[in-house]
Image (tube, rainbow, N blue to C red; front, side, top):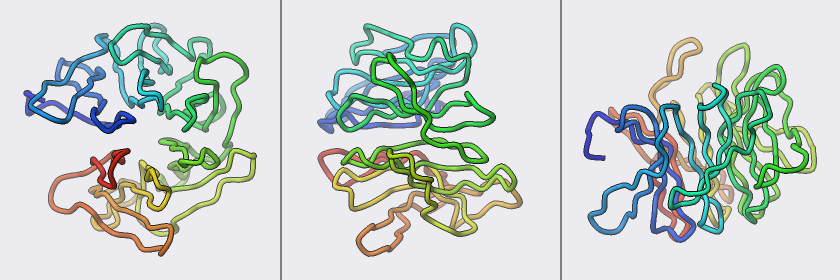
Length: 256
């Protein structure tokens, strides 16, 4: 963005790989922007509200963007908007809870999100239009955030925060109701997992190279896990913090 002091964060690629959607506070509070990545283009602002709009996610058909917003009644809700900024709708207006981190299923029929409808934040699945029953997917002690669907739509990867230590770790859960399974076991804080389009890799952020102290995370870098070999590679390094990696659909590159 033109303002070097702005925070441009939480990117997601369009299905054709030509555009990015992200949240930015360049206007004073967080709104949703769309950027055509080829050429010298300026981001197009598609939301404008005094409440914060964050964590945008592009629909598989390329027509809509889901995001979380703190507006209206003061709760965080899941909203959907068309890419041109029209047809804004609140999908969780009646939940009386904080709902966020939306992600579309690969077929575009469902949205998974994080909500504190219980004692803490768990993962829930609803239809993409917000109608019908909402199904709770996890019920762990602690908070579950940042879910992402596997490309075949059968599994969910997410970050769980231990309620006692505050440590962030990556888990997998199937949609058939089996208990979640922890993927990495270590002392680092791992967060924001994202599945590669070909299912071979998982990218995530971690403070493994620069750990924090006590229950405070350190500096995050981007890592890639190879499902075939079990190898973990560090992608970024240096003084900056790198967060929210996102896979480009048409290539193997990621956008931290």
